[in-house]
Length: 226
Image 1 (cartoon, rainbow, N blue to C red):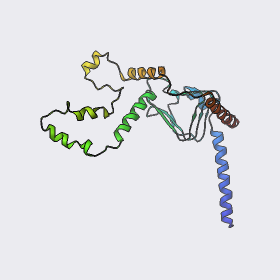
Image 2: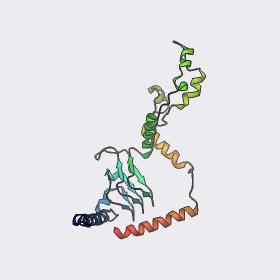
Image 3: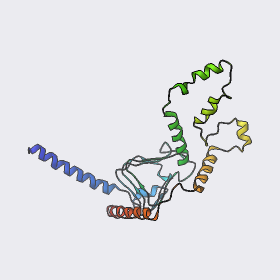
Image 4: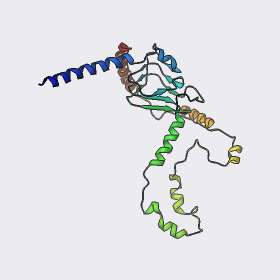
């Protein structure tokens, strides 16, 4: 083995060891000064290093015993000086694990973010091109000046369009007559409905115990670093 290769391996091992040490030192715990900038930073919670993009910490809440993995982005709004309409905007519950490289970006609430993501998915989805979607026979049959509203084709496909239940596209008079509900009010109402709804699934006691065991081991290891 050449001297150059031995030196490269030696230097690489030192760099990796130093990086591990620096990441351990840079991990944020509830007793660190930086944690006080958050809306809430839970007991035994940890923000592992290297951290991703994080700003507007005063609108971010991290629950007790929650682990935020490396390179996770946590933001409220789209700029560091943005004033939000409510606080906290992003709330991460107790005993959660947010995996490496995740992105959590809150606007007025995660509900609004979900709605915007749904809009984006609908916009970029593949548009099939075939005889059914082109509907050339339908166009020829109805002809200029005709109406497509009463056709079977329209009844068969009109529900395929993505429609938001948060954004109101009605005329001003109709919106006013319905109570002049703002976007923020509609978001709050949807949040209440989601919280009141039955959960789609519930972990069994065995699954819960398994997760608790994993979390206990991780937290014990992490506590030694903080």
